[in-house]
Image (tube, rainbow over all chains, first blue to last red; front, side):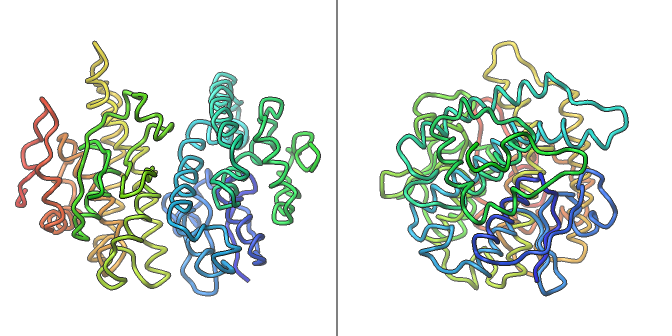
Amino acid sequence: MPSLLHHPLDPSSRLVRLMCAEYGVPLDVQEIKPWLREPTLLEINPAATLPILLDEGDTPIVGILAAIHMVEDLWSPNVVTGLVPADPLPRAEMWRLLEWVLTKLNDEVTRYVLEEKIVKRDQRGATPDPSVLRVAKANLNEHMLYFNWLLATRSWLGGDSMTLADFALAAHFSTLDYLGDMDWSKAGETRDWYSRIKSRPAFRTLLNDRVVAMPPHAGYADLDF
Amino acid sequence: MPSLLHHPLDPSSRLVRLMCAEYGVPLDVQEIKPWLREPTLLEINPAATLPILLDEGDTPIVGILAAIHMVEDLWSPNVVTGLVPADPLPRAEMWRLLEWVLTKLNDEVTRYVLEEKIVKRDQRGATPDPSVLRVAKANLNEHMLYFNWLLATRSWLGGDSMTLADFALAAHFSTLDYLGDMDWSKAGETRDWYSRIKSRPAFRTLLNDRVVAMPPHAGYADLDF
């Protein structure tokens, strides 16, 4: 069985877990805290990032881009029911939005929240900086306006079909939701979209996640949130 | 003819130009300053990022991930002479290193240098902050140690064959080199590698680039640098 070095709240790890669940691939997960930069991790990945996918062979598949392509190559059922559109233009739209989530949303929102609320728990005496969290929240509101605007005319982020871009955004939102940083009252169309994606069987694995001594925010696992 | 909205020193735009030159695809380029956030750009790409590829149709291909995949789909000659390895493991290694360059190297080095030296030229009264440039330089030294280590046992970044990862790193280094931020005396194996890649016909287009009122650093266009 393939295994994944992950952290339960790392959005890129969540994206790979969602893909594998959607494709019916059982995944053995092994928790790791990349910010501790332990030698065993650095040996596999000097960048100290997640996810890291381990399949049959000895060679670890490192990073979200490598993992996405490997999962797609090995396990995507076919172009119709897979997560990557077959037509070039919808596929380009998927990559555009995936890049938006993996770089822009991550840089402006998610990584701040994770740094303040999760990484700092392992730093003696450190506490979350409210001014950083305020910036992240303000940035998230701007992103939300864009996603609401997109989803006002589209069923899914990239168009008529669910794609990897939906899973990527849902992975980030589910991390933020666990930590109580999603304001669903401002989410409009995006709330309906999240409700649909949260009801998918593939999503169940994420909803059972628990971080030690940090239970999820109310509503995290409710399908009717 | 396909055209590219780019900035001459934007490394992701350079990567697409290198790919197209390598594949023999003529490209019409149109310069843009994304940091000015002009309405015509925001309408095409609310993230205000480059590159943006325009082919026959009306739909712009936005962002480096979408552009890479589109160029590869449309114009890669075949799996033997193309820039994406056919075998899954070398391909995963290519994606790992591409992610390293596009996110880690960019976040820790290139974007600081571009912000301080290029973007600030359009901000009245702003000047480059030497402390930021010092951090970027120190970070670059760390990256260089890793690339030297990799290239001590490999002909190309990802292994025996040149891949997209080589072009991605060369795109960033060529931007830094233009601005005089590459210290080749510390580059060791990476200098030999850059010398080889700089001699490729595909690289010529970049070496003729000039930014208004900012000539390239000495040695930028020399093959024997």
